[in-house]
Image 1 (cartoon, one colour):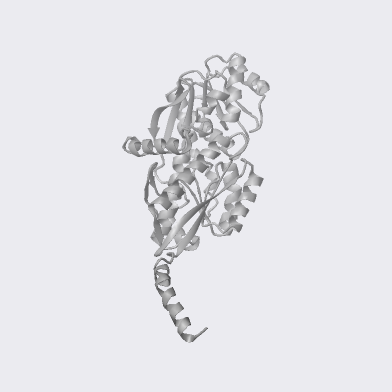
Image 2 (cartoon, helix red, strand yellow):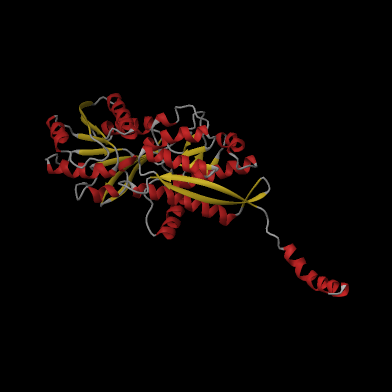
Length: 384
């Protein structure tokens, strides 16, 4: 081929090459957000709800377009299932560490969040739980550990006081499921009851896998309580409440923490939820000024997934948004660089302002008291 032919070919090729060079893709930084919850097992409906909220946040961030340190960011959700089991939780945590995630939202329960938190801390990765309420979770002194809901000290004591002042209970029996969450919230409930002047007439325990409660319920029935508190999840609380009614507890009030605070307990109790006689508390809640934003989220969630919000998906949404905002403020998605910004964040979330104290607990956290009417949760009050 002659030199003139080569030059001619180069001239032909040049106009094609120029536009392609002009369309060179802008550098994109991939930001990996890990999420862990029990998306299998007895409380999978809670776990999937949490995951859905995180997924909505990632989708919203990518639709909006976010730049971190002058580079366009694309967020990816790496979702893991811990089955509500501490051993599986640590395996899931190590898997996310190995995947080099930039942050973790989770875990769902206190019993899984606490053992996983050491793995994240040892690897310098920020962890924000949207639903773990045990005080022990943030009492470890880890600078990587945060939560966006109130803890059991607040939730349990408020419920305990309300049982006496709001439900007129004088004789209270307590059952817990021996998990970090169940024991913790039950102990704080007892403190609230005693502070309010009522008597704890019986204390029993079961497990988070049990389905038969006749022995402990028979003991409790003999103490003639006017209210029974359960520290645990709906998967146990529902059958327990059903068996209480079968054993002749009548309209004895039944109270629990956020673990029983969804409409799922109505199905699991098989008709044993009497209107106004079951009360629970959510470790969070939106006051009147935030109602429009949370209503918008609920509508978007139902459109996206075809189901209703359970409890904590708005909090996983806010957790993702808060950590993304910290990255933007720090100009980096590297945990070592954005962790100080996260610790100092004041993010206006849909659940309220996300800001943390020195331990990583939410500042000025709210609690929502609910009862059940017509098979659905009904708000009693939002308090602090």
